[in-house]
Image 1 (cartoon, rainbow, N blue to C red):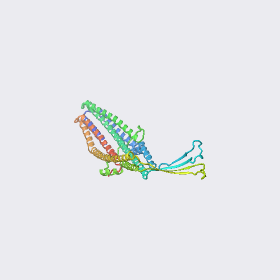
Image 2 (spheres, one colour; image 1 turned 45 degrees about the vertical axis):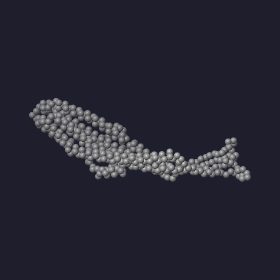
Image 3 (tube, rainbow, N blue to C red; image 1 turned 180 degrees about the vertical axis):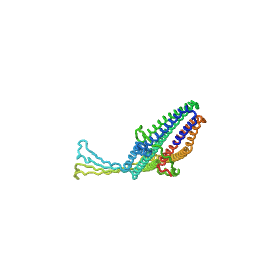
Image 4 (tube, one colour; image 1 turned 90 degrees about the vertical axis):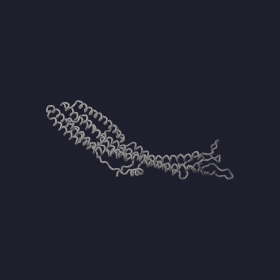
Length: 463
């Protein structure tokens, strides 16, 4: 930017010297040029000071790490998944415990003519206790399956957290690009206004054409329209970031100014594959689903074996025994053992085993499919990162400086009537587009890194 200011200042100085023979007509031009240059420089300085002042107010500047921290701590979606895991974590002990015992109270064999307990020997008041016992191993398998479900839910919490961080980072960097795009649009508006001033002056001195002025004004109007569109896009992106951070949609989001453009080197792609296979929560979640399905298959196979129920009842009788034995009637104790017989195993237990076997196969295929998708995510992110990094380096060291030199050369040539105004404007538009692509390439490298971290499952993806 400093180079462009100096080049513009030198160009205007050379232009005024080259046309010094038109003393009368050039005085308005020189006055307007100097005023325009002062406005340009003052606006640039004012913008720089404003940006610096904004960065000095720490509480108003949202850095990417702060956006991630806010989103992780306040996200309703993440809190929902954590609550789901907490609920599932309470299930294993429930399903791994014996069914609740049954206590019964009965009144048996009361005569309906008198309801007298002493009348009949079989009249009884009973209290009983019974307990069901699943076949050995069934409770352990139920608890094991529920534990695997809970662990899968825990990994799903981590997966949601990873994707939340990925989305926040990508939104944040998209906002950063739009801020740089707005700066680029504003700077190009200033330069086009300078072009308009030069074109008007040449037209007034009879050295230029009115169509040059109209062309510059048209391009300026296009930039104004583009600024309106970029501002609207930025607002929409800010709304998305605020939602991810659980803020009100119209919350003002201010980002820092220029950041470091350092590009780290990635670890080997095969190493990233192996790391993802170990730490990626989504793959670990699928593995837990397989373990849970295997436990349920084992449980279905155990259902061929019967469950048991054992009970004991004490019966209290009133009255006396008849003679010759006599004496009061004694109480009675009853013991009970019942067995659940898998009588319809062909239509019930066998079908359940087949069902659980298919569910196990389904989870195996799901893991394989997810594994392939994760590896593809890693490769795509690595490819996008290297492509964007190379583009950024090319724009930074070659294309943008060359385009700036072209504009400066075109401006100098136009001032001495060796370059037509259309080519000057075209060169400035080309520079404008390259500057946008420069910032876009930087943004895409950062977004590719965010995607890669989410795909691998951790941030240690560098050499």
